[in-house]
Length: 422
Image (tube, rainbow, N blue to C red; front, top):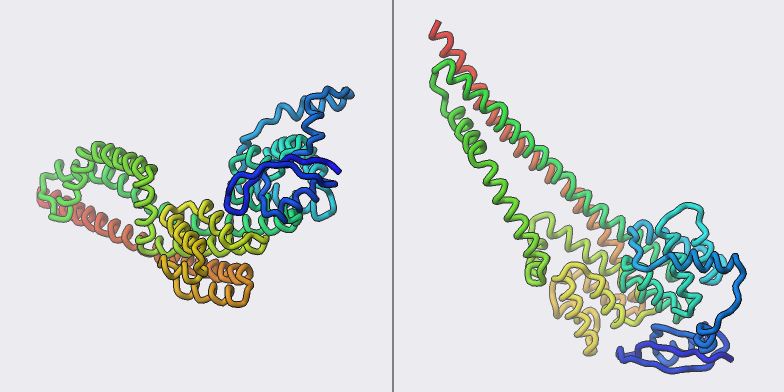
């Protein structure tokens, strides 16, 4: 039997420290779970004593130690690299490897990548007695609080491998969701930029040539051409000051929305923009349902799952919404009643959640609702991709048509003036 010193949090979030006897680290984690203690660190007392002792090392061990010591924490990872790390580690654990040998295999990858460095750092921390979830927090800020708390739950329950597998699938779904939303917004933005570039060319190149033509012929310009030349002159005289003012306005706006008050206003205002607002709302509902399903299916209680979900919600408006739902559930309300009380959650979503609560399988129900909202997102993305480009193209086409008409009428008038002079 070994003596383990632990630090963790109790059922109500209070700090808990102490010691316990167990035959292995896994048994110690199970005993803490029975006592409803969420471990933050769990270190064998023998390991603590041996830290101060100097043990002889072979040259190979010394070289490995030196190589590991060069790897520091706070390694930046992309979402694709986090998915790769999670999926690969889940495969190794599912095949029967323990955590440290699995990390060693990832550390010994031939190609140089941040995943290799993260694995080396995690292995070093785990060997020193740090829990895997705590080591993840130190290894990279990109894992996030939600990810680390899920891993902590997997350590306590002894189901780390299936949890990582489910988390990898969840991360892939979230990445695909973000990609589809970005795709729906990038194409219309590209059309607007192209149209703006075309207008700049018209105003800076063609309109001055038109003015020179009429000055040579001495004929009077028709009204559409006069309007076009007047707009070109305004653009030439005031284009740069207007551009500077717009740049300053954009800078001030960005600075404002980065402040807590400004971000709260902007996150709510975005939801009222036609086409974009419904898409962002559906994106939140899909993320909410899929994340809650992931947490609940991994064994977390509903209240703890809601607390983690509130921390993982980027939109301040929806963050406050989930916090209010969490408070009501903490006071004893059902999830359905809490969602109805705070508002903004669609009735069909509440009805499906109610079915999940009544059947006692809320996790699976939330997963199905999340899949349904993924289809809603795809429908709204298709709608944006079909409607918005048509509107932009029609507007640009109308502007080009008016400009061409103004230029052609001016050219015919100039030609008529030349014929009259001869």
